[in-house]
Length: 153
Image (cartoon, rainbow, N blue to C red; front, top):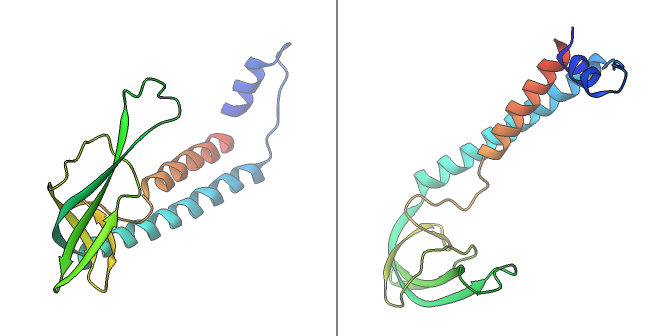
């Protein structure tokens, strides 16, 4: 008996049944394949970024401090450091686009990973990458695959 049918029948008053078309399963498998493809694309972009980018030492020149709207007491601020770094004698400045709970001090030295062809494209931290995280797509792919398989069983 199909797993989905059993679960649905258990939840319905009077023990009704639900027939799920196999095309729904194929739709789930198609979504799983698409998510897997997108995840592999972003994983490749991340790998290329890490291979072709360079690391410089940056200096924190300013820190923007913000609080979340639901943080009424201001106990959990987010910090957005502004960092300057030099590449081939040119000075570049980068403001963090995402906040962090780690407080920074002006004058603190931090690693900056940048694109040598366009040093304005930079992120904070030696392992940071400015592209989409593929794990979201891999998880969605696995869930869609499991759902599609469960419908077929």
